[in-house]
Length: 338
Image 1: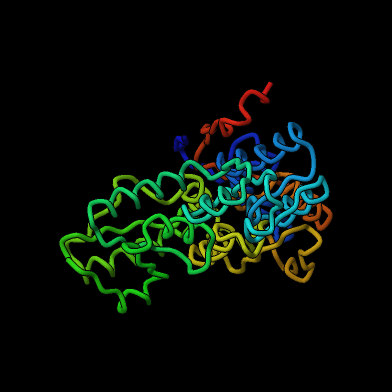
Image 2: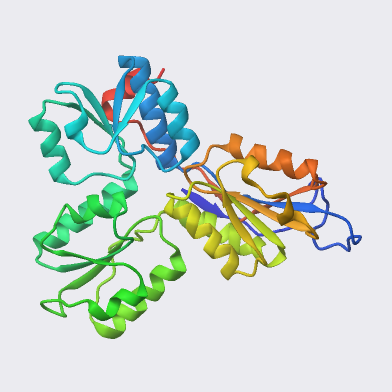
C-alpha cells in the first residue's frame, strides 16, 4: 500500500538544494507534495472506462461521473462516454459502468430491470465499507456513517442498510443523533474525508455514546490520508498552497482545508493552470503544490510550468510516503489487459 519514509523537505540533489538553507529575499521555490494525484481506485476506474471503450466501442454509459475530476470527465466524454444521473436514462440492454464511488443495491436492481450490462468500477476500499455496513446491519447495530450529505459514496453505503444507517455530517450533527441501544453502535466513514475532522466527529460521538465501536479497519482511504500528511508536512513553509482538483472532489477540497489548518498562509483549489490568479503570487517566496486523488499528473505539470514562468523554477519534493498499491480491473475486462 504505502510505506512511510523519513521526511526531508529539502531533499539533497533537488533543483533547489536544501530547503532550510538561507535564501535571498527574491529567491522563489515550489514545494511539491509526494504522493499526490491518482490513487489506485481512481486509476482502476478510469482504466475501466478506457478498456470498455476499446472492447465495446462508443457510446458507453457511465452512471454519475466516473471520478470527480472535470478534465477526466470531459476527456472521456469526447471519446464517446455518455454520463447519466440515473440508470433510467440508459437505453435498455446497453452497457453502463458504475463509478468509483459505488452504488446502492437499489441501483443494481434498477439496472437489472432494464437488462443493462453492467461493469462495476467501485473502488475496492469503498466496497469494503459497503461490506462493513451490511455485516453490522445483520447484527442489528445502529451504524453512524460520518460523511457529507448528498455525496455519491455516502448514498451508496447508506443504501446497503437504510434501516440501520444514520448520516452524521460533521461534529455539529452529533447532537441530533439518537440510537436504539447505546451498546450496539458503530461508526463508519466516507473514505475521502479529512482525517482530523473525522476523528473530531468520532470523539464527540464517543462522548455521547461511550460504548461506540470502531470499524474493523480504517475506513478513510490510505491515499486520502497520505495526501493530507504530505500537505501537513509542507504547509508551515508555504506562503501559498495550490491544490489541483475539482470542486466536487471531496478529497481535493479537504486538502485546501488541511493546508490552511497546518499553517499555509493561503490555499486555493484550481482545475487548471489558467485558473491561477497571478495576484496570488505577489510577494510570495514558497508555493506548495499538490493534487487530489482523482487528478491526472498532466494538470499538475501545467501548474508547475505556469509557476516557472513567474520565477518559481526551483522544485523541491516533499515526500512522506511511497505508494505501491494496484487494484485489478473488474473481471469483465481483465482479459482485455494485454
